[in-house]
Amino acid sequence: MKPRQTRKINIGSLVIGGDAPIAVQSMAATQTQNLEATARQIEILEKSHADVIRIAVDSEKDVEALKQLRDRFPDSIWSVDLQENYKLAPLVAPWVNKIRYNPGHLYHLEKDKTIREKVQFIVDAARENGCAIRIGVNCGSIDPDYKERYKEDEIEGMVRCAVDHCQMLDEMGFENYCVSLKDSDSAKVIDANRRFAKERPDVPLHLGVTEAGLPPEGIIKTRIAFEQLVSEGIGDTIRVSLTLPNEEKGQEISVGREILKDISEGRFRSVPKNFLEGLNIIACPSCSRVENDKFVELAQDVRKMTEYAEKYKLTIAVMGCRVNGPGETDDADLGLWCGPTRVNLKKGEETLGSYAYDEILAQLKKEVDQLILERNGALEPS
Ligand code: SF4
Picture 1 (cartoon, rainbow, N blue to C red):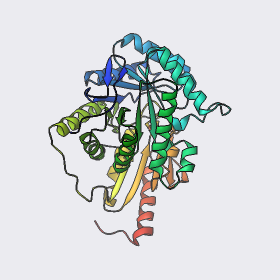
Picture 2: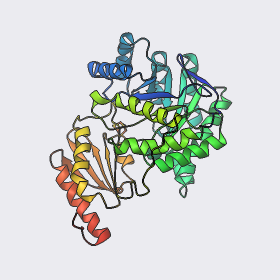
Picture 3: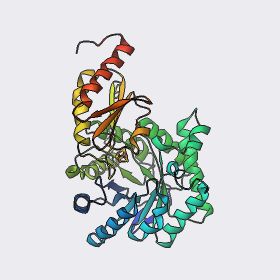
Picture 4: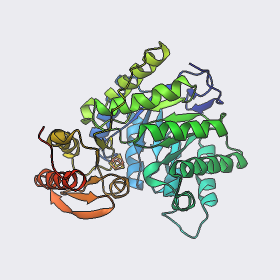
């Protein structure tokens, strides 16, 4: 393994970057205001020895819930996802150790303010409260400005956006930050992180394959990316994003540690050349935004129901919420995103309709069959 070149940053008492051990983190998948369920998630992740636990905060009520949870878990290291509501930064910063903002979500609120003004607001809150920052760039929510400018090379759009935000933080004299560049495609994660690390070898990187989906495929996709990057000296903290029932969330940590151990001991799993050449199911790891607990079961049912189509090159995305679901399914051949009582079905960017949870599988099957017919002329007997 090549030594890492990044500078060290502090997330509470945890140090990442440079020669510090690679930290393993995960995220609570429950609604933050559901105190019992979120406390249970935190307990599970603490027991699994998560170095950092991430929690989503969308509203002032979520901040209140977070404060109460903090009383119960005074020592664990927390990162918070600001989602679209960057204005919550000063309210939430006293209770957490790291703030993640997504550059692609900053344009939503207060359109009269510049992105730099909004970043300065987050930086001020982090600085006053001793928090680290993660600039978290995501393929499904690239800043529209960069998306437009780099239409021909989406990866470059992600990298340029991350590099520009790093420069903004540098100019603001704030150094305690790291960056992530995530995609659901392992190859794109490898490409984006390599390009970024070449340009900013000093900035610590948080690695992850977003929406990797259900085990075992989700683990394999993540392993492909981590084996390549970590062995090249890229990556200071990792998150394995798996679609799992809440009680099994600790697997994200154990799987992450197992992958790191294998890499450090030179055990690389060869991935067959044709892996993911057929059916590819991506599914989000779920978070506090999931409004119907049937989501994980639905993702499992989709995989089972589509087994008959595994040799066809098709991507099906299953997403847990109406906030990121519509955008994150655009690139899939067929996309499902879950609302409180209905599941929305898409073909590429086109919405086909919304269906009850007990109707969606039959509807999806019709669309899968139709796509196979369109592309192959006929469905081959399995
Ligand atoms: S798609 Fe929605 S539910 Fe799934 S991880 Fe993203 S924000 Fe959370």
